[in-house]
Length: 226
Image (cartoon, rainbow, N blue to C red; front, top):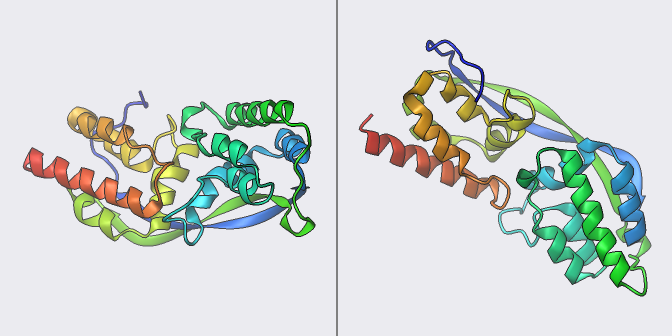
């Protein structure tokens, strides 16, 4: 449970963002090199290759939801391992180090079952990237939760990313910004907060996620007669 706040809540400031990609200098051409670099790379790179993909153009209909699975499938042509990596959901792990451990374990299991180490072509190597979030102030605010009904459908997908996904790295209790803000109104919106908690942000495009949030806020406030 997040720390208690005063019932007089501050306005919700709408922000937008972009990811500035930063090369780590680490790369892999075969499965063993991929495993080694996953063991060594900074946590931010693991996060980038799972979450940063959501902001890539054309992600509305992805084959895989993370860069590791995509490269294993198209660079190493290992469909079996790609499918195993593709079902990993970072939401299921308490932190990025636990996610890293699971990645390594899945890859090591695959290596143990192979007679030959798969390699990619030199121009198809996996490049480990990390990123920094660049935040923009839209100068838009909302003061009442009911305003979420009309505000959320008009948000950019990168704004959805910032408030519903990236927020979990910087808020108390690892919450998205919507839940964090609603907690400030006391018990009044606990049922809405619980509904938001049930939305999995990973296996959806940001466009779909925006629609899920929009539909949730609309139905909630219509039923509540607010």
